[in-house]
Image (cartoon, rainbow, N blue to C red):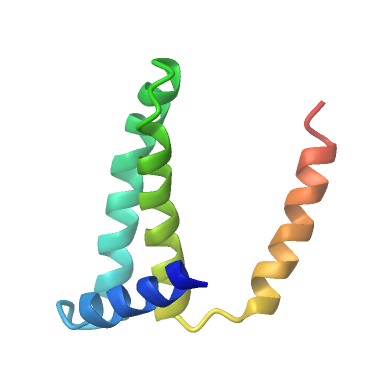
Length: 90
């Protein structure tokens, strides 16, 4: 997948700017936190820019996973957990 390769390259570039993965994690979490109110606002406005901002959050989350060597099986377990949450939604 081209986007995953690009995110890995971005992480290689990005991680050099931080003293360690903890500092990188805090940077990413701050940026994710910044996006949440904006996502809600864009959604309320039905603004299609919402999806650009969601892509930003996806990129930040993927970079966190890669930087911390989180294995695919962890993600797959979380997918199952989301299935359960979706079933219980209504």
